[in-house]
Length: 78
Image (cartoon, rainbow, N blue to C red; front, side, top):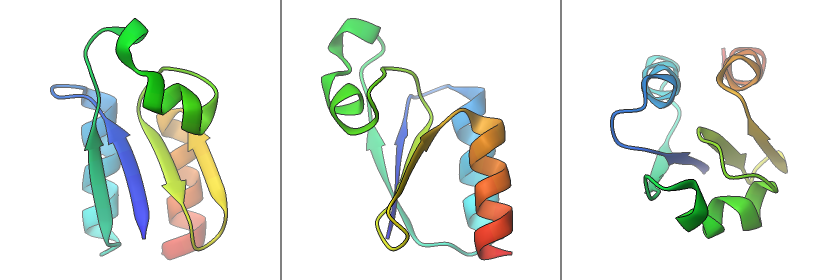
């Protein structure tokens, strides 16, 4: 299962959602707070407070930055 930490209205998060759906990858969304200072769960998981963040338990991968995430998803699930 892939977990996507995302923020409502975040265009970078939506790009990742589109890619996950296109690749037919099952994922769970974790909605985060708008204020960076309130994103403690994201920081605990990834070491930073920016979104999107993807956690892929099957492969033991946690990563941020939409371009890197897209490359990872394409190379792993395409």
